[in-house]
Amino acid sequence: MKKDQLYITIIQSHLHWENPEANRTMFEEKIRDVINKTDLIVLPEMFTTGFTMNAEPNAEEETGLTVSWLKKLAKEKNCAITGSIIVKDNGLFYNRLYFITAEEAVETYTKKHTFTLAGEHKTYTAGQNKVIIDYKGWRICPLVCYDLRFPVWARNTEDYDLLLYVANWPEKRITAWDTLLKARAIENMSYCVGVNRVGLDGNGHNYIGHSAAYDVLGEHVSTQDYETEFVETIALSKKHIEDNRSHLQFLNDRDVFNLE
Image (cartoon, rainbow, N blue to C red; front, side, top):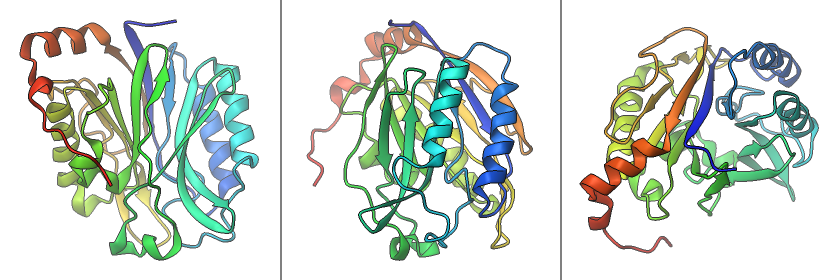
């Protein structure tokens, strides 16, 4: 069923370092406490472990415990849930986002741009495919953290409605996070939602959140600059997208190119 309004719930939280069981327990409590009706719940990048390069003991198979857990909660809350985890697939490790619906449909996106500054490219294999998810009449483009810095990869050549980033983006570069989320919304004439974590990780890096949602004009449609844990449900409007694209027609002048 197509929906003019898509209700999306951001969960900004601290993460227990390399402790999937503790993180699942924590997020299950937060998810079950979501009172407002929602269509999609968004968790941060590597939400079961934090952004660790210690992949072997923290990785799961593609159909592992966390995926089963997400299916159970999505069905219980009658909504989709998304976030990324560490996956081992054919002997290789991936930072992979799962998008799981109440009907237990599963779609995945594997992080394209591994974060070389932290050596992510030495541990995790980069994905190669951009993914567009059709959900309740909305076209959603999910991306992961460092992908935010690469506008060509995010360019709206598919007429998507929502650009979605899950992240572990540190405090020291939070200005870039704020600026680029807004820019991606404006240049793609799409809603852009970014969900980050808070707190210290096991490497001593601090995170201050700034999870946010922007409309197609770059206006904030979420509570601004929260730097602590929070859960917020936001209504996104398809009419807002259609009216502005029809009036402004900026996407008609976009460059044509092929990704290789």
